[in-house]
Image (cartoon, rainbow, N blue to C red; front, side, top):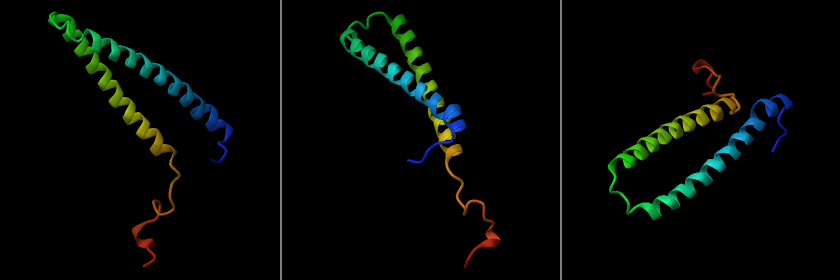
Length: 94
């Protein structure tokens, strides 16, 4: 792997490392809640708490979709620009 310029490392790479660690913590918390929900799954008699949980889950899913889109944007922005992408159709070699 090539060395990143210091400015790119400070501006992008290090903060992404922090975000990755935060997401691993969130994943751990969600694993815990998933195990907890499996043991409490039989207590579905109260409709109101279940609807509140469903609303929270929907918010989480919307946030995850946004995160995926932002990651795709970052990946696209950091991809090296290929030489062929900048060529005009008139400059073809055939």
